[in-house]
Picture 1 (cartoon, rainbow, N blue to C red):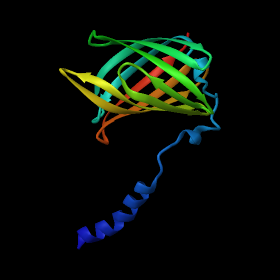
Picture 2 (cartoon, rainbow, N blue to C red):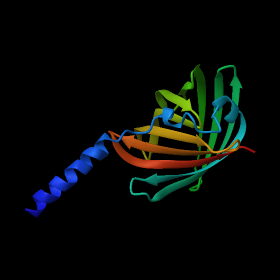
Picture 3 (cartoon, rainbow, N blue to C red):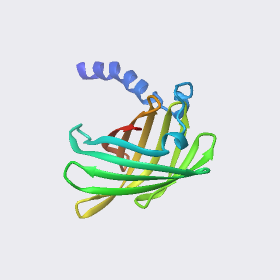
Length: 177
């Protein structure tokens, strides 16, 4: 009898949680300062970040040196990663502004195209990254959110998933000189 009562009491809460909508970029349309990728990702930047597994344990820390350059609506963002375990990695993005706060991007280790939408101080960037782990490579989906805090600092939080299951999270803090 107690199990039945517990089920009846918790079922409505579970339904409410299931109906809660995920955030969208338009939720941040009124937030300031407004994020303009061409302005923020222009010139040198430094980012400090970490990767946590699905249990929340820090697995890797890293520093990224970035340089962005734009010609019209097409930008190049060079990222040089230095990991705490001594390994290094480079990623070069080509980002195209499509208008109305929408962007697309490509990089050598990105499967297909990344899709982005900026509203207010936020950018949602969605893509699949081909991620080497040991002797194997996995295609991992990124749901990447960036929030401009002021003219110099941007925070980035990315959920990583595989087959719809969360496998970890990346957290970054970008800083302009």
